[in-house]
Length: 436
Image 1 (cartoon, one colour):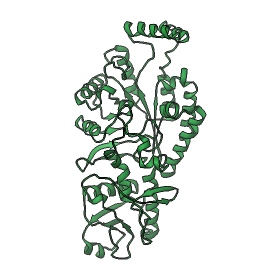
Image 2: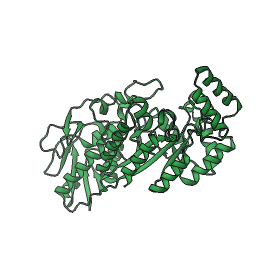
Image 3: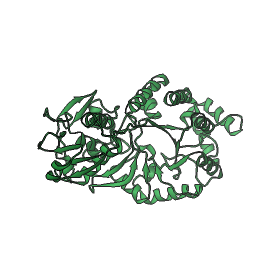
Image 4: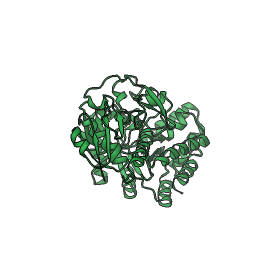
């Protein structure tokens, strides 16, 4: 059964957000029209999105956001709605929802506010603490999923024959390989330098560990790959590995991709799972350097690369995504914050990137992650037990709306050594909670 939606004007923003909310999240077939007579004559389920009511059909009062082409400071009221706070509040008792759900969804998913604020952290990243969601205590809720689910329930109550999709929860484990090994395969200069650094710091335990690993008497603390393969088989997971293969630099410390040992590992990971590029810190906005890294990894795997996640989550909108599109990357997994857990785009589902600078939808699919190991351990200073509780809370939020839960962790973390003691067990418990 097809729905007809009346709008004041059909714009790129309108088509984008209605496709995301009605078609993708609710599974509804619909047409958009700006023809009032056609809308009145239509004999079927209807929805009117506009400035003023014209009849008794379900109505959502529209703000100007979706009918503009420029980006400017937004002014809106907020309203409490089903355990959330929603922007673009509407003071109209006849409204289907007490806010403009389409403008609110576009504001979050397009990352509109990131084009306006110049607040950045030491790595040039937009700060989680600067978001409207964080300031309103909503960063840990998949707001768009919650709002659209409620919209579907309202429409179904009015049109019982309307077929509204019941989304299915999905889990995607992702692993960033920033450094495949802590000690092994580093070469003579880095190995000797490591020993001297430990000696200068008086870290005899680390000297002993390094020595035992290099003599083959102890497993490298970052080598958690057999553990990851075992989890994948036991829980039927479909993970994605993001490989850092840039040249050695201050913030890029993996070994050279030219090393046979690293190439062998990459090929093995590629045999088990999807592999994507982890563009180096120093390749940030440097399309030529990023292209070299993609080409090098693609050559090892003998296949093209389509997936990416920025190292250090170092992303600038819209330039980072524009460059990925130029490089034929179709799927990006960077959308999340380092300093806080939650939903950077307010949604727990894949969506296409809308380029506000050019006011157009692109074919780049964005896959937002909900939580990262380093966020809990290093930014929020949580212990293992508290981290597990927080992760479970986010899982519950995503399960409630049938969304996609993406977890970001590192092979170093799952080695379970030094500051990561207890984290492999925590991760296994989380996977059991998710899958069983």
